[in-house]
Image (tube, rainbow, N blue to C red; front, side):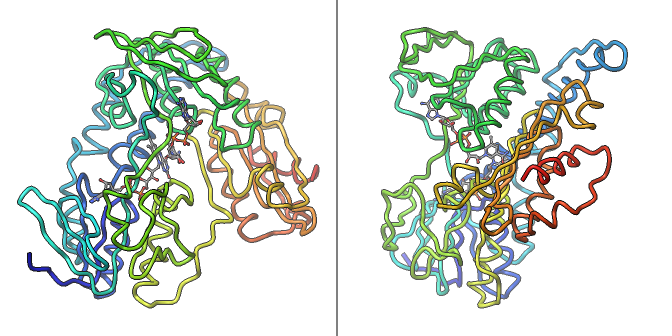
Length: 456
Ligand SMILES: Cc1cc2nc3c(=O)[nH]c(=O)nc-3n(C[C@H](O)[C@H](O)[C@H](O)COP(=O)(O)OP(=O)(O)OC[C@H]3O[C@@H](n4cnc5c(N)ncnc54)[C@H](O)[C@@H]3O)c2cc1C
Ligand SMILES: NC(=O)c1ccc[n+]([C@@H]2O[C@H](COP(=O)([O-])OP(=O)(O)OC[C@H]3O[C@@H](n4cnc5c(N)ncnc54)[C@H](O)[C@@H]3O)[C@@H](O)[C@H]2O)c1
């Protein structure tokens, strides 16, 4: 097979892959982008965008149900077809990436639909519907393969018609009951959405709390909100066996108890098949969980990796941030090295759970002399005015020796927006003494930060 000579091959066109391909093409390089499914990746078709449309719709239902407490009376009648149609028509154009392919090609990159794998150093073989194509990349290969849902090895699960996020966003109907395996961001966001649309919901999370990668206080508060909305939350419990009789799922727990539901959503994390990507041919460990990269996103000689697969925060903003740095490195342009100190994470539940930088335990593990402060959003002036739906907290984590914030968590209505102030403080290493002097508008939710700064 003759090889086609190019400068760079980008394998996988998630948000970062699409971005890096366009940047490299704009920089004058001959670029081929390879995508086996949809250009844009998980985020626009199966993740961020459609799930946030669901969250937005479920939030309006919740607000409608709060009318009785604040403004009169209202009857709310959920209709899922509104959400399903919006996802199909506005978010995903019925899961069609024509516009994204055109955008990519307009940027100057070439597009090949197929599955790429590194077949030799500097070489990518792409399996397309018309057979195999071979590309030789003079400058290098950028890997942006993203992740697929990880399905845990629970007896009977793989043989059952379980859902992942990809099925949940395509749902045309709300199940009468839904069991969610996993209380991470995917699990809690989708659980609250489907519950607000009428599904009887149970979340099963083996760790002691929901959102285990966030501050424990955040997971505890979210659990109390979800249970007050009628969801069942079973933390510290795992599924031992899954059965499906053609209509319903039965899940036997480690404790012996049994749960039953019409649908089962697997939201237990993500995985990438590095062996299928051929990373071994580039001298990388194909048995590893992800691809280790340096602060220029270099994974090896002539190989860069960006996005979820790098394990530096599985978010769209990480992927496009890394794309910018990798593109600059390949083009030989100046840029700052990757800096993840103020990486934000937001779970778009109601209240939103948002964090930046280090949790208290992560800061202690790094040997920092940690000082923390926590304040209650409901007890703040704005929280008290807000009333229904005012649950929340702010937790700050400071390095007492340097007198700066190293992390912060906001659980609040629009907590992800409030987080921006903390992100600036962590990134800019603004002294806590200076933060205390700030004038914070009354009565905003973020004004509660002042109480926490004082406590620090
Ligand atoms: C339900 C859900 C909700 C989420 N919500 C948010 C959110 O609100 N905010 C946020 O920041 N993040 C969110 N995320 C995470 C976000 O979707 C990812 O971090 C984001 O898509 C970036 O991923 P990526 O760039 O690594 O690649 P991906 O988006 O995973 O795309 C990788 C692409 O590579 C392709 N590919 C893989 N292997 C090959 C191959 N060998 N050859 C050719 N193509 C290949 C795949 O088909 C895929 O299209 C969410 C995730 C999920 C599951
Ligand atoms: N708003 C956002 O930015 C957003 C939203 C969704 C997802 N994401 C990203 O996507 C990635 C995937 O999210 P996720 O929630 O699927 O993964 P996750 O790894 O964050 O959480 C998975 C959860 O499943 C639990 N779990 C593991 N095995 C289990 C089992 N056998 N049964 C039940 N539970 C089990 C884990 O303890 C964990 O709490 C995350 O890294 C996240 O950052 C981001």
